[in-house]
Length: 322
Image 1: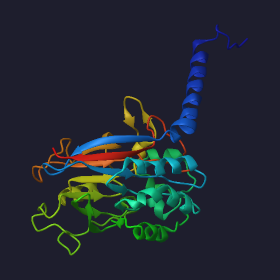
Image 2: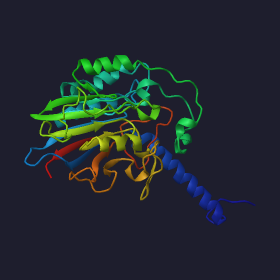
Image 3: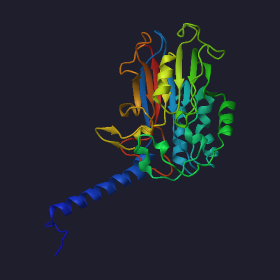
Image 4: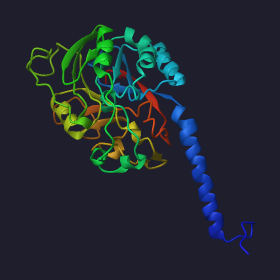
C-alpha cells in the first residue's frame, strides 16, 4: 500500500515539498513581487568639481496595459521627488489601447525637462510565446507570430510636444538647473535600429576636444545595452550611459542574480550602477571607464507577468561632484 503519511518514503516527501515550494514561489512572483514597485536611489560622482547635486529620474520598461491603475498612480507619484531631469529608456506600453493610461502616468513628469528613446515594444506589441525563450542566447532568433504595430509616431509626437527630447539616433542639449547637458542617444539595438550619430555635427554642442567647458555633463541614452552601443557611447566620451531593456533578468536566483539580460550584456550588469568597459569608473581619460546605469524597469510582457528576486523599479540618480 502506498502512503503519503509521515511514514512515507523520503523521496515522496521531497517531491511534495519541492512542488509546494514551487507553487509558493510562482504565487509570490505573479501576485506580489510583480506589483511591488521599488524606488532605487543611487549616487553617481560624475559632475565637475564644486557643483550642486543634480537629480535624474530614470524610468523604463513600463509595458503598460489598460487597467494597470496601481502602476499608473505609482509613476505619477514619482514627480514628488522633484527631479531636475527625467530620462525614459523605452518600452512604455504593451497594448494598442494603452496611450491614455500612459499619458496619465507620465503627465506630472512631462512638466520636467526630459529625454527619451524608444524600445522594441514601443514599436511592436508583445506576442504570445513561451517565456523560457528569453533564456536563449539571442531570443530574437526564435520565430514568433507577426506582432501588432503600435502607434509609436503618435507617442513621439506627444512626448516631444510636451518638451521632452527625442534621442533616437540623435544628439541634443538641455539646460537643466543652470547646467548645460549634451545628450546622445540611439534607437533600439534589439531591433537593430541603432545608429550612433556622428560627433562634431551641428547638433553636437561640444567643441573639438570632446570634453570642453561648453557642457557640464555628457549623457548617453539607449534602450537595450548591447555591447556595441556601450562601446560607442564610451568612445564618444559620455560621462554616464542610461539604459533599460533587461528587466534585471526578471527572474533571479538569490545569491546568484539574473539568469539573462536578453542581450549580449554580461549577467553581472543586468541592473544597477556599473562601469563600462571596466569595473572602476573614472573621469581621467579615455583609458578609464564611464558610468553605466541599467534599470530593471517597472513592467513585464503581459504574457509573462512574473518577477522573482527582482522587484520592478524606477531609479533616482543623484549626480554629484567626486
